[in-house]
Length: 190
Image: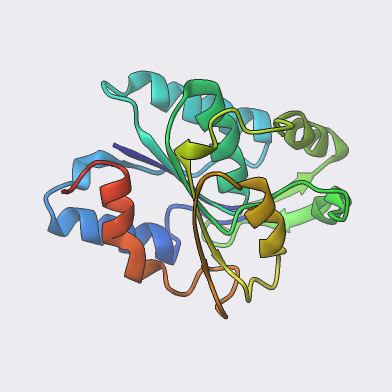
């Protein structure tokens, strides 16, 4: 099973989720994908995903994008799971978490929400200082990411599998080229 965690302000309606769902449906694997709208509050998002992980009969593979990749990192470390991370958020001294503060709107549902200092503290609390199992991670990053510095992710996920591509953007423009590779990484196809 793949448990997909979307990014900040995104949702299950994103192009990446839809492309993965279509590919899995084509292969008869539609029932092997879980992706729900994550609550904007980090603690609530983690609780929702942990409840899904607990319902899985076999250990799932996490796939996360941006903030969802950050959550996937914490969950993979906590539950010893594999995780494919698309242009992940990496906390580092040059990143000002205050950039998230304030009012935002979900891209697909239109829901408005306010991200507070308490939410920032919840994110910071989820940042393990080092990775105990870097071999469980596959970094998928594009150097043209206009939102996050891909070099921070390359450093953070050293020791894991890395696919770093020139150009692109934060949405990871070549996602469709890697769908079957992600399914292989998850053990869903040979």
